[in-house]
Image 1 (tube, rainbow, N blue to C red):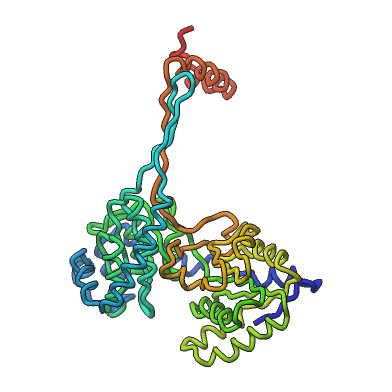
Image 2: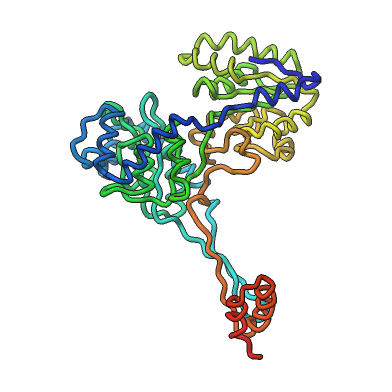
Length: 430
């Protein structure tokens, strides 16, 4: 891992270089994705079947071969060991409980002249959630994307998940059952995103698409935005740990590994206020790496984008954290709630030495779909509010129209919009 010191004259430039990540679109990927999206839009199910067979190595003859119903999801759940069933249900219940508290409600109030103003909250009609498949199974992604939609009151939750060689993962499908998914299409890639965005003969068009995917999925989500809503175009996973030296070094080392093992471009950073403690964590990492099945990925990630930063104190550490604006921030310090007040930018804040980031990934309750690549400066975690929308309510009384009409008339004439002005003036008594 790179070693940085805030007292070095080159610290700011070194930090900026550490955080730099090439987010430019790949023209070749964009070209391929554009062709796939256009083809799915034109040929519907036929194109979807063709791409699924080509890219996933399946042998679907009709779209029916790629559809799973709630009965199929329930059967997958019932095939699991009781321990896994309980874990899924417990995690889903905690996520549901947390997201219930995010649910927005409609409200109104009246002016003194009887004019009613307010906001009406309604759920989206239908959403699509993308769940990665292939080398790994992500039941947690199913729960984190589907449950807030379910809590928001979305009537139809359509899930797409690739099944390479036709291999279906029971834990993923069981998670869909537990989280209230309506129907599953075993398709993935840009073709799945296009099908959700434009609709086909069998795949219903959705209002919003959420969930992570590879570069082709990200490019497809970017392309269809505007036709449908999307959650975000996420970058590599990130963790930043601020440690005051009171947490066992092994714990911190493994917390850094937990994000580094995602892929070679994930980022793990540790900020400490004591060089001996940073050395202790480094020694723990050197020892524990021998036990990691994904050692090669972890070492590549830490070598590519990892760092240890020596700060003069925790105040400075918090300011650095605000600049980094990490996806996951662990405050592995005494009195973490007090230090959390100094954090302005982070996707999720994990407070105290017993709060490992991995608990947030699976079962703590808050959503694990979080802003990356410094976008926590202006965006928020996925939540119930992402599946609800707001409509303004305006009911002007006769008395209110006399006052507001004159104001609107003056402003409309000022903009040379005569019909706007006359529309308001027609309602004036004098």
